[in-house]
Image (tube, rainbow, N blue to C red; front, top):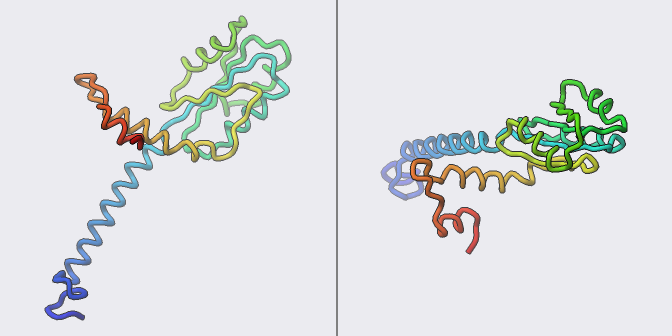
Length: 173
C-alpha cells in the first residue's frame, strides 16, 4: 500500500481507482450494446433465378447458412421452365418466394425481390452463385461505416457529411 492510501503513489485512492474501473466497464458495456445492434441489422438476400434449378438449392442453402442474426432470403423466379419452382417449394417456409408469371429479365427479378425485402442491408445473389460461410462477418466493418454515415446526415436540413467528415469516417486521407 502506498503512502496516504494512494494506489501506486499516484495520488488516486483505491476507492477512486475502483470507481473509475466500474465507470469504464459501464461505458464499455454501453458501447458494446450500441454496436451489437448495428452488427445485427436485418439483411435481405435476394436470389434471382431463371432456369437455374441445378444451382438454385446451393445458392439458397448458402444464404440460409449465414451466421448473421437477422437474414431474410428472397428467391425470385423469373418464369423458369426447368423445375425451379419445385426447388423453391422444397425450401418451405425458410425463404420468401416471389414467382413471376412472365420473364422480365434480370433487373426485373431483382426489382421484384427488392420490393419484397425488409432488410436494412440488401445483397443481390445470382442463382448460380453462392455465399461463403461468414460472409457478413467480413462485411461488418463496411456495414458499420455505412450505418454511421446514414446517422451523421442531418435529416432536418438534408445536409450530407462534409468532405472532412467523410474522409474521417471512411479512413481516407
